[in-house]
Length: 265
Image (tube, rainbow, N blue to C red; front, side):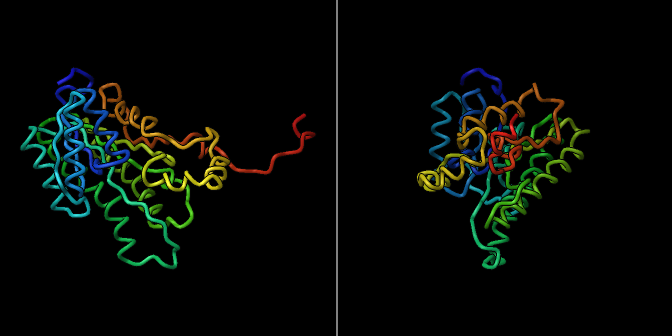
């Protein structure tokens, strides 16, 4: 196993079978971490675990549904059984489906709230219990979204879940600080990944989207993972309850009509 910032640390990453979750898991492994990756797709997380072994970490795969309380408990119990402890939890499992608010059914709503909010809470609860019991000054990092701060069309269920995650992060930070456990949230903007690739491959969509982002491009996974690793490291021991946006300036920009040249002098 390679030596790095997380040599000897045990990290749990939910939603780690693909996309940002996979990138986060591999980043911890490159820094020497032992990483337990969780998802519903067994073949996907087994492949991620193999890749983690290849880059110098140690990978384990656990199939679990974060929407189910018993599964979140089983995930942490399996981690302790296989690895002895939990040092870091990254709540990355999420669902984001577009639908007109008139067409949102109860099951659609529950899918988003149960995955994005309920799942994050019960994973954090189970991990924190282990951290406290073993005297671990652990790290919990929730993956939020700009959609928790600003509304997006046709994403009412998603926005509600991520807005709730913002206050959940602060509430957990408040309760867990006396135990030396930090809780923070990283909120990406649009990431150029499998979910968004088809949209960004449409020139008209990409052209209009770029107008709303000063950096003029979507994020890549590598724009997000360094912040996650920093918040999980010893260098961030006094940072907790923070919601940090990584979105290319989108939230500091209000689209407006270009002023006439005379107004600039």
